[in-house]
Image (tube, rainbow, N blue to C red; front, side, top):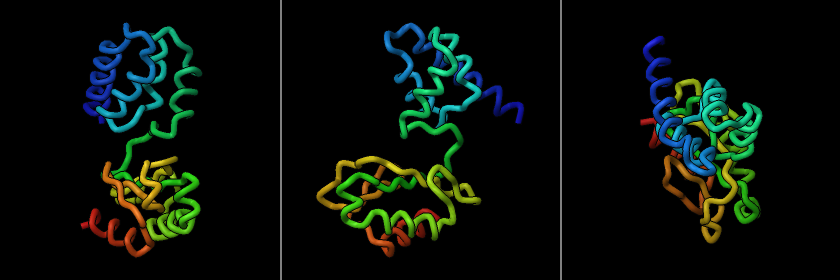
Length: 157
Protein backbone atom coordinates (compact mmCIF):
# COMPACT_ATOMS: atom_id res chain seq x y z
CA UNK A 1 0.00 0.00 0.00
CA UNK A 2 2.91 2.35 0.73
CA UNK A 3 4.19 2.06 -2.87
CA UNK A 4 0.75 2.97 -4.24
CA UNK A 5 0.60 6.09 -2.07
CA UNK A 6 4.12 7.16 -3.06
CA UNK A 7 3.34 6.57 -6.75
CA UNK A 8 0.07 8.54 -6.44
CA UNK A 9 1.83 11.41 -4.66
CA UNK A 10 4.55 11.49 -7.32
CA UNK A 11 1.95 11.67 -10.12
CA UNK A 12 0.02 14.39 -8.29
CA UNK A 13 3.16 16.44 -7.66
CA UNK A 14 4.13 16.23 -11.34
CA UNK A 15 0.65 17.26 -12.52
CA UNK A 16 0.49 20.14 -10.06
CA UNK A 17 3.94 21.38 -11.15
CA UNK A 18 2.86 21.15 -14.79
CA UNK A 19 -0.25 23.31 -14.24
CA UNK A 20 0.43 25.63 -11.32
CA UNK A 21 1.63 28.62 -13.36
CA UNK A 22 -1.22 28.54 -15.89
CA UNK A 23 -3.86 31.25 -15.67
CA UNK A 24 -7.08 29.61 -14.43
CA UNK A 25 -5.20 26.41 -13.65
CA UNK A 26 -7.72 24.72 -11.35
CA UNK A 27 -10.05 23.12 -13.92
CA UNK A 28 -7.28 22.01 -16.30
CA UNK A 29 -5.39 20.56 -13.32
CA UNK A 30 -8.43 18.69 -12.00
CA UNK A 31 -9.09 17.26 -15.48
CA UNK A 32 -5.43 16.20 -15.77
CA UNK A 33 -5.55 14.49 -12.37
CA UNK A 34 -8.75 12.62 -13.19
CA UNK A 35 -7.50 11.69 -16.68
CA UNK A 36 -4.24 10.31 -15.26
CA UNK A 37 -5.38 8.77 -11.98
CA UNK A 38 -9.08 8.14 -12.62
CA UNK A 39 -10.32 10.38 -9.81
CA UNK A 40 -9.40 13.46 -7.79
CA UNK A 41 -8.40 12.21 -4.33
CA UNK A 42 -9.60 14.36 -1.45
CA UNK A 43 -6.09 13.99 -0.03
CA UNK A 44 -4.83 16.12 -2.94
CA UNK A 45 -6.90 19.20 -2.06
CA UNK A 46 -4.29 20.64 0.29
CA UNK A 47 -1.43 20.35 -2.22
CA UNK A 48 -3.60 21.82 -4.98
CA UNK A 49 -4.76 24.69 -2.80
CA UNK A 50 -1.20 25.60 -1.78
CA UNK A 51 0.15 25.44 -5.33
CA UNK A 52 -2.67 27.59 -6.75
CA UNK A 53 -3.05 29.95 -3.75
CA UNK A 54 -6.63 28.83 -3.17
CA UNK A 55 -8.40 27.62 -0.07
CA UNK A 56 -9.11 23.92 0.39
CA UNK A 57 -12.80 24.89 0.42
CA UNK A 58 -12.47 26.43 -3.06
CA UNK A 59 -10.87 23.27 -4.44
CA UNK A 60 -13.49 21.07 -2.76
CA UNK A 61 -16.26 23.34 -4.05
CA UNK A 62 -15.14 23.02 -7.66
CA UNK A 63 -14.64 19.24 -7.45
CA UNK A 64 -18.08 18.70 -5.94
CA UNK A 65 -19.85 21.22 -8.18
CA UNK A 66 -18.97 19.46 -11.42
CA UNK A 67 -20.56 16.03 -11.85
CA UNK A 68 -17.65 14.95 -14.03
CA UNK A 69 -15.17 14.73 -11.16
CA UNK A 70 -14.92 11.67 -8.92
CA UNK A 71 -13.33 11.63 -5.47
CA UNK A 72 -12.94 7.86 -5.26
CA UNK A 73 -11.37 5.25 -7.48
CA UNK A 74 -13.90 4.10 -10.09
CA UNK A 75 -14.61 0.56 -11.23
CA UNK A 76 -13.03 -0.91 -14.35
CA UNK A 77 -16.02 0.31 -16.37
CA UNK A 78 -18.03 3.53 -16.07
CA UNK A 79 -21.75 3.35 -16.89
CA UNK A 80 -23.38 6.75 -17.24
CA UNK A 81 -27.11 7.18 -17.65
CA UNK A 82 -28.40 10.42 -19.16
CA UNK A 83 -30.77 12.34 -16.91
CA UNK A 84 -31.48 15.27 -19.24
CA UNK A 85 -35.05 16.16 -20.18
CA UNK A 86 -35.13 14.41 -23.54
CA UNK A 87 -33.94 11.13 -22.08
CA UNK A 88 -36.27 11.45 -19.09
CA UNK A 89 -39.23 11.96 -21.42
CA UNK A 90 -38.24 8.79 -23.26
CA UNK A 91 -37.88 6.54 -20.20
CA UNK A 92 -34.46 7.06 -18.66
CA UNK A 93 -35.93 7.10 -15.15
CA UNK A 94 -37.14 3.52 -15.58
CA UNK A 95 -33.77 2.62 -17.12
CA UNK A 96 -31.95 4.17 -14.17
CA UNK A 97 -34.16 2.27 -11.68
CA UNK A 98 -33.44 -0.95 -13.58
CA UNK A 99 -29.69 -0.30 -13.58
CA UNK A 100 -29.64 0.43 -9.85
CA UNK A 101 -31.64 -2.72 -9.14
CA UNK A 102 -29.66 -5.10 -11.38
CA UNK A 103 -26.26 -3.72 -10.29
CA UNK A 104 -27.45 -3.39 -6.68
CA UNK A 105 -25.79 0.04 -6.36
CA UNK A 106 -26.79 3.69 -6.49
CA UNK A 107 -25.27 6.57 -8.39
CA UNK A 108 -21.63 7.29 -7.49
CA UNK A 109 -21.16 3.73 -6.27
CA UNK A 110 -19.19 0.78 -7.62
CA UNK A 111 -20.23 -2.86 -7.72
CA UNK A 112 -18.57 -5.02 -5.04
CA UNK A 113 -16.43 -6.76 -7.70
CA UNK A 114 -15.08 -3.31 -8.74
CA UNK A 115 -16.36 -3.88 -12.28
CA UNK A 116 -18.89 -1.06 -12.84
CA UNK A 117 -19.30 2.43 -11.42
CA UNK A 118 -22.73 3.98 -12.03
CA UNK A 119 -22.89 7.72 -12.67
CA UNK A 120 -25.55 10.19 -13.73
CA UNK A 121 -24.79 12.46 -16.67
CA UNK A 122 -26.70 15.51 -17.77
CA UNK A 123 -26.77 15.21 -21.56
CA UNK A 124 -24.78 12.96 -23.81
CA UNK A 125 -25.77 14.93 -26.90
CA UNK A 126 -27.72 11.99 -28.26
CA UNK A 127 -31.22 13.40 -27.76
CA UNK A 128 -32.59 12.04 -31.04
CA UNK A 129 -31.89 8.53 -29.75
CA UNK A 130 -33.16 8.91 -26.18
CA UNK A 131 -32.77 7.36 -23.70
CA UNK A 132 -29.00 7.27 -23.92
CA UNK A 133 -26.23 5.76 -21.83
CA UNK A 134 -22.48 5.79 -22.11
CA UNK A 135 -20.26 2.86 -21.21
CA UNK A 136 -16.54 3.60 -21.19
CA UNK A 137 -16.74 6.61 -23.53
CA UNK A 138 -19.07 4.88 -26.02
CA UNK A 139 -22.60 6.27 -26.33
CA UNK A 140 -25.60 3.99 -26.89
CA UNK A 141 -29.07 5.22 -27.81
CA UNK A 142 -32.64 3.97 -27.57
CA UNK A 143 -31.63 1.86 -24.59
CA UNK A 144 -34.08 -0.56 -23.06
CA UNK A 145 -33.62 -2.52 -19.84
CA UNK A 146 -32.81 -5.60 -21.96
CA UNK A 147 -30.21 -3.64 -23.94
CA UNK A 148 -28.68 -2.43 -20.68
CA UNK A 149 -28.55 -5.99 -19.34
CA UNK A 150 -26.70 -7.09 -22.49
CA UNK A 151 -24.24 -4.19 -22.17
CA UNK A 152 -23.55 -5.03 -18.52
CA UNK A 153 -23.12 -8.72 -19.39
CA UNK A 154 -20.66 -7.79 -22.13
CA UNK A 155 -18.32 -5.95 -19.73
CA UNK A 156 -18.71 -8.65 -17.09
CA UNK A 157 -17.28 -11.27 -19.44
